[in-house]
Length: 236
Image 1 (cartoon, rainbow, N blue to C red):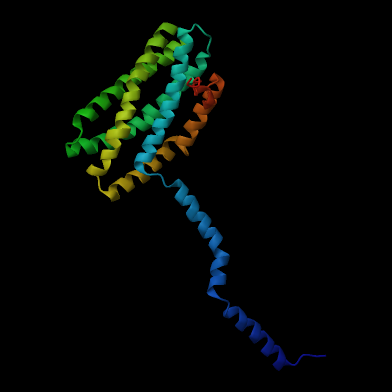
Image 2: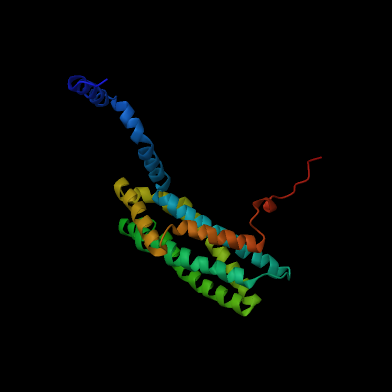
């Protein structure tokens, strides 16, 4: 049967009308997954200024554990791969000294100094940064030349200084940052630090540093944290 022109027009109008009155919720649901995924990704990348600085201290702490194990092996006359130690010192230089500490010296310490707050602390922290860089140079040289006595003394001095150094920053300096900058400035600093990090390392420098230190821990046999759990005999 041939369809009349009038019937054809009525049919097409009905189809068009039904598509035009499609519920807005249905259209929104079709587009929602991409938008939700994008928001989720942005939320995962949203790291506050203090959280960013403190997790970088976590990288430092893991290198200090490598230094601890080196000290233990030197004192016990056990063999160790000096390349692991020099590579660990390389992480300290590139990620901690040239990046993390530079952020503190250029953006954190000046804000306290301008506000007249924690001046003595920032002065000591700056001085310790300078000493730490000299110790890193000695550690690198001693590891490459197999000078275990200089290596032992330098590692011990570095760890002794940096444990109270980072602890004081995490518990005193960083929490006080909220008192010397506005919320807007605090948030802007986090975005600024992320930009500097990506420009410096060509990507997520923190993740890169964690991957490097993880590999060194595995090479040194200290990656499994279960080995650090002490065996305590039951109470009689």
